[in-house]
Length: 110
Image (cartoon, rainbow, N blue to C red):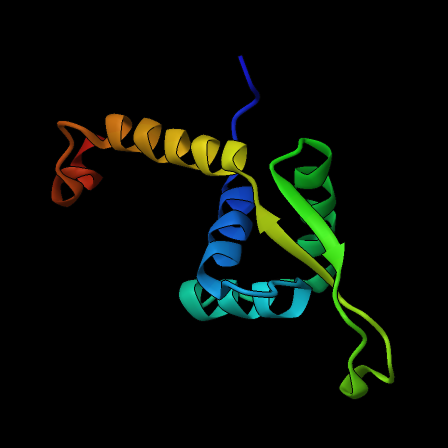
């Protein structure tokens, strides 16, 4: 059985899907911050991208060099079908966990 996804791994994969096109570290970080309101370190994004690539859930490639980066290329990423499937399974698992719970009554359960 494949290893599940952690919360931050899910956020990174979802951010890549939202960014579309040439997704790379900074826009991924900004997308997570914009959607969650939480600060995200660039290092955390890059470490997570490497881990996801090692698991073959994302693929990376070097973009064309850009003048704004002094002629340097960016490492871009895309989510592979296996990443989309694992992300979908993570969502289904969380939905099953929320089944039959009323968020308004959670405080009284503790």
